[in-house]
Amino acid sequence: MVTIMLILKIIGSLIIIASSSLIGCLYGDKYSKRLRNLIYMRNCLQLLETEIMFTATHLPEAFENVYKKGNKNVSYFFKDIKEYLLSNKSNCIYDSFQFACSKSKNNLCLEDEDIEILLSLGKVLGKSDRIDQQKHFKAILTQLDRSRIEAEEKKKKNEKMYKSLGILSGFALVILLI
Amino acid sequence: MEKPKNKNFIKKYSDIDVSIFNNVLNYLDPMLTDVLVKVPDDIKHEIEEIRIRAGKPLMICMKGSDFFINKDGDISIYNINPYIATDLNVLKSFQIICNYSIYAIEEELKNGFLTIKGGHRVGVSGKVIYGKNGLETIKNISSLNVRIAREKIGVSNEIMKYIIKKPNTIYHTLIVSPPQCGKTTLLRDVIRNLSNGIEEYNFSGIKIGLVDERSEIASVFNGQPQNNIGIRTDILDGCKKYDGMILLIRSMSPHVIATDELGDEKDVKALHEALKAGVKIIATVHGENVNDLKSKPNLKQIINEKIFERIFILDNSKGVGTISKILNGSSFNSIREDDGNNYAYIKNHRKSNYNSLF
Image (cartoon, rainbow over all chains, first blue to last red; front, side):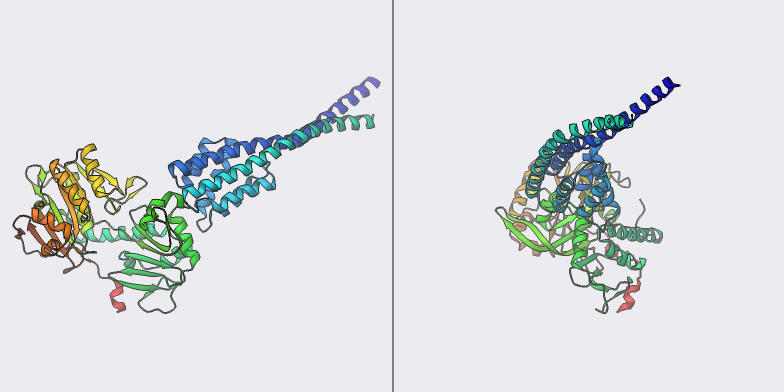
């Protein structure tokens, strides 16, 4: 009887520890996911810049190309923009960006300031000649770089903390219960 | 080949004309599309231009006059309760027309017009910006003029016998016409016929190089010609006539070079180059008649040298695109074989309701 109770206790505590460390991991993962997606997003924007600068491709087609060439974790963002743009003619590029941002904000683990950067691109994209577009891209890419550095720092600081917090709180709960 | 005299043929044509108009509407702000789509079909097929001006009534042009249009799609010659286009209408239409990508149409914008799918041209006006290299761009777009292109396939069938020189070559040909009399339309169809070949005359088709400086003949959109210009035609789109002719002779070995609106000093030079290379020329030129051409500085030379062996003169006397004279280029005598009644080639075949508005 006693051994059965002991085994049950051990199994219970293992479950608690496993789940709490999983929660910790999930929380911590958000930071590395954000960093990863920011890097992918930057690559995608560079692809978009190339489409505009060197081949002067029209935006819908350029979005499609970025979707095909870019990392699939992020590039669906551009497909969303394209589809929204073509199906809602009365709206402009900015509206499409807003739609795509609100749709994939949580999915991409981006923060408000990252979304703000993307939206600011939506305000100027396609509205001027190529030289001007390049300047905008340059500005956006530097902003994204700054975001990336910040995301890196946050990741370093928080990811480990959340992970160990998860495991430790699991242990603490087990000790309390025992 | 069927001739466009047949009534059924004409009926089918106007249905196409209506669908052409509806296709154009895809390029406008949905608010404007909602209004214009309500216009009755028998008017739609004749509309030549849609004029959208910020803060001014929406208008359509056909048969040389313009009409107001109210929000239910009724048209009227009087300015009563018309649909007023807003600046947002203009802006959104412009965005859709340029596919949200102003950077992609920089060059076209410098010329003041864009070509959209189907070969239609959209004229743009607004605030012009000058830079180091002259006119740089147009901003604050305030007016759009959508010109609906309707290629008339088969209009040159009747005159091909004057152009073809047996066995398988052609005469140097010049088409002379005042503006809006259909010279580009005629040139386009001549090119198509020469390029495809004509069974009737045992003419097998020849290689044609087309220098389309103003993108009017082939109406290239995204690299694809939107008009039927034949299977043996190579197009240089947006290329200056001088550069284009030299380039084509060098690279594409054309039998014929076709181009629109001669007039520059350099064009004459290019013509001589082409003649040296043994290439046949088909060209159009602005003018009323041969004497008018002789009074123009650069054209005078061409006419006096008697380069062109066939000269077609168009006017509006029996409707748009009447071929009033067909001349032999060396003697300037008429070589027409009939009374000339058959050649008003872009006649308005259908009676439409709009006549009753007057």
